[in-house]
Each structure stands twice: as C-alpha cells, then as structure tokens.
Amino acid sequence: MSHDRTVIVADCDHANIEAERQALADVCQNVRWLHCRTEDEVIVQCAEAEALLVQYAPLTRRVLAHLRQCRVIVRYGVGVDTVDLKAAAERGIVVSNVPDYGTQEVADHALALMLCLTRKIALANAQVKRGVWDFRETRPVFRLQGKTLGIIGGGRIGRAMAGRCQALGMRILVHDPYAAPEGLPDFMASADLETLLQTSDVVSLHCPLTTDAPHSTAHLLDEARLRHMKPTAYLINTARGRIVDEAALARALAEGRLAGAAFDVLAEEPARADHPLFAHENFLCTPHMAWHSTESAQELKRKAAEEARRVLLGEAPHYRVN
Image 1 (tube, helix red, strand yellow):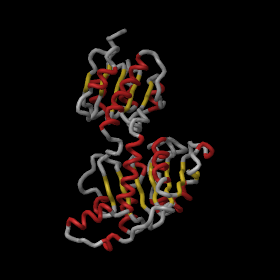
Image 2: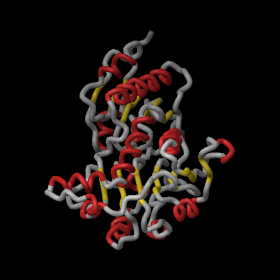
Image 3: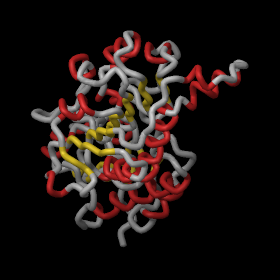
Image 4: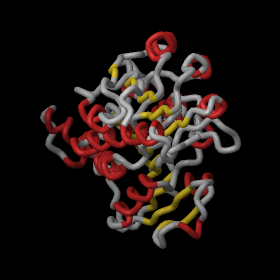
C-alpha cells in the first residue's frame, strides 16, 4: 500500500487528529494539521494536498485554482457552504461531507431548545435566581400536545425531530422541495412554505444553506415570511444562521410578532456580545453545539478521514455532494 499521499487537515478546532491519522495510516504516514483561516493561508499552505479535510477555512474558486493536485475535499460536518461546489466539480475534485454523524444529537438539541423556550425554562431559571419565585411571571405557557410543529427540511435530522415531537402528541407538517410527499412517514404531512408558517405553533429549521436557484435558502425566512407566522409561534434554528434574516427577526421580537426564538447558529460566528437578538429575553442561543457529543465528535473525525481514504484509493465516495 502506498504511503506517499499528501493529506492535510486545513483546519479544525479539535483537540487532536489521532482518529484521522489512524484511519489514513495505510495511505499517509504523516497527516499534516494546519490552522488556516483565510483564502491566502489555504493557498500557501495546502497547495500540495491530494486530500483536504476542512472545517471552517474558505475553499472558494480562487483557492481551488491553486489546489492542482487535490482529488478530494471532505468537510467536517453536514453543511458545505464554505466550499465552491461548482468550481470543485469543474476541476474534478470530489467534495464530500459527513451527513449522518450527529443526526440524533441535533434532533435532541432542537427538541431541548423547543422545550426550554415553550416551557419558559430559561426565563423561569433566570427569575428564580433573581429572587422571583412566581410561575405566573412565565405566562403564557401552552400545552404541546395537539399543537403543530412545522419542519423546514425533511432529511435525516428533520425526520428525527419529527419523530420526537410526534411522541409528544404534536401534529407534524414538513416543507421540503426535494422530498416526495409519498416518501414521508405517515405522521408527517407535506405543506407549502406559506401554509406551514401560517399554521405552525413551532417552526424548526433543518434545511441546508444553499444559494442556488430555484431553491435558495439564504434568508428563506425574511421579513415577509416571518410576518406569516403566528404572534404566538416560536422559531427554532439548528441549521444555518443565514437561513433567517436576523435583523427582521429582531424586529419581529421587538414588536411582539413572535413569541420567541431559540438558535444554535448565527450568520456570523462567534457572535459579538452586542448582537441585536441578545437584547431579547425570549431569544435563546447556544454556541453551534447541537451536533456535539463525545460519540458524535469521534464519529465525525473517523468518517471524514475514511471518505478521503476511499477516494485516494480509487473507491467510490459514500457522501459525495458535488
């Protein structure tokens, strides 16, 4: 087996890359671990890579033009919005992700955000610690059984979230232009986006961030669509920050046009302390951690490395996205 492949981890915020090195040991004796943040850093430091593993570093058309030996790019995670998929395809570079490593964790997190928000747990906790022991200060709180959950994005995570909420007795609607209605589980009903927004008591986002017409999801929930939602409704986002127009959401919360929102993702991360949404007591935020568990972190690293190894050995990739 050849040991002369050049495999580079362009960036990752992990404690180590031992899982990657083990998975790639028979094709690369020394996996290089870098900390690239900018296009220029990737160009200068990764030009010789045959396989590139990346977390946040930008892989634009300009960057890809300098990766003359690259055969495969694997992104740690589900979203691939940091990679120019079209430019990679034109250069014959396989782009893969790891779509199935944290499905249960993200669904758990979305459910936890929904419960924390709708049951007013964060609000009640803050009040108790301020010396206010009075459940009436959390009103209104509604019963979830019989309420409608609208899921935007009916893939693995969306369906996992739907299953959890169906067990709570909620009615489930889903909007996904890529999913055939007949392929949905019996407890999920297909709906157009406007109907879903107008009908749902909770809307949970589980779609990818895409900018390609006709199904771009960038600012999918803009000012106009947020106005379709009930003033008593809640919005959950564990997908990508740019799917929601954050300025429009801040206005909706300020004007009482939404009951609350809970996000694990924002358009710019890490978030600045004076982010407009943080001024609202009914906005909850976690630091892009929905995917995380000890088990999912190791699964992500191993599967990303195994995908790169497959392509280097001339095998078919499991998770190609371009």
